[in-house]
Length: 249
Image: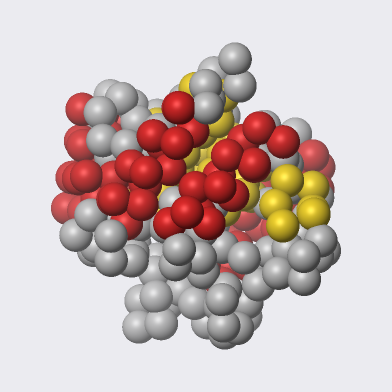
């Protein structure tokens, strides 16, 4: 049976977390950089445990005013120290609640910057390698993120996006461009099925692009996020696709 993981970025102050945690199989929990605090981390982890959802860290540039979406915000030792602090805070909270960090997925601009930046990808991979429990490294396939995972001997989980438009080279259309986010639910559910079954998407120029996907991201910060997530899960399961976390051994 074909299986796929469904993940969502949570603990960021949005109102849909509780509903999403009844639908997804993996949670990327904000850990104090772009969003989140001790209370939100504990609350999100508790709900994840109740729903049998894998807990992952979602560190980002420490840019709360810009929600971690300012490209090039930080790098080098300062970034390493910040990411280490963020992930450690979540890992410690999780350990106190009896679970381990199953994966690490960078947030926002850090993720996008690291896709093509070896040094940034290596910093994130280094933090992942130093985190107890051997968490997996989540990112886009065939990018510097995957290369960094290989260099640091990390399990790599390839991520694709059900509600984002793709360019012909397999990268995401910039959010600054019109049509970067699929608002049509039918488009998102169709893309989810194609990614899970065939590893393909149709780029905005009409080309069919191969996109490796072990996990599919559903954004939780838009109106109707839970309804969209439920529709995606229902359609996948109706096609015989099993939903389960890929980051747990």
